[in-house]
Amino acid sequence: MRDNMLSESEMAFAKIVWENEPVRSGELVKLCSEKLGWKKPTTYTVLRNLCKAGIFRNEDTVVSAVMSLEEYMAQESNQIVNDRFDGSIYKFVTAFAEKTKLSRSQIEELKKFIEECE
Image (tube, rainbow, N blue to C red; front, side, top):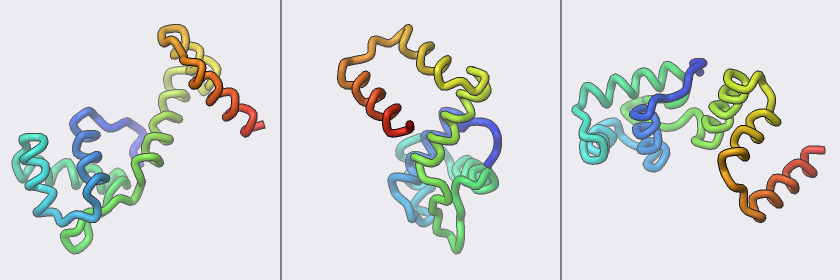
C-alpha cells in the first residue's frame, strides 16, 4: 500500500466499497453518484488508484477489499504515530488525552489493553 493516508473523498469512497462488497463496478458507480455526487469517470479513477494502492481489487467487474477497514485503520494509525509522534504511542496518547477528557470506561479499557499487551 502507498505510504500516505486516504483523502477525505477517498475514505468516503472506500467506506462505500467496504459496506457493499463484493459489489459490481456498475453498481458502485450508481452508489457513488447517489452518495457522493460523482460521475462515472471519477468513480473509476478513484477505484483504479485504490486498487493500485492495494486496498481493493476489481476482477471481472466485481470490486472487493484486499484490506479490511480495520486493517487500513491500523496501518493509518501506525503511520500517524510514526510520522507525527516519532513512533511513540505514549506521545500520541498523551497528546490526545490532554485535549480530550477520557471517560472512566475509556480509561479502564486502556488499562485492560495495556495489561493484555504485557
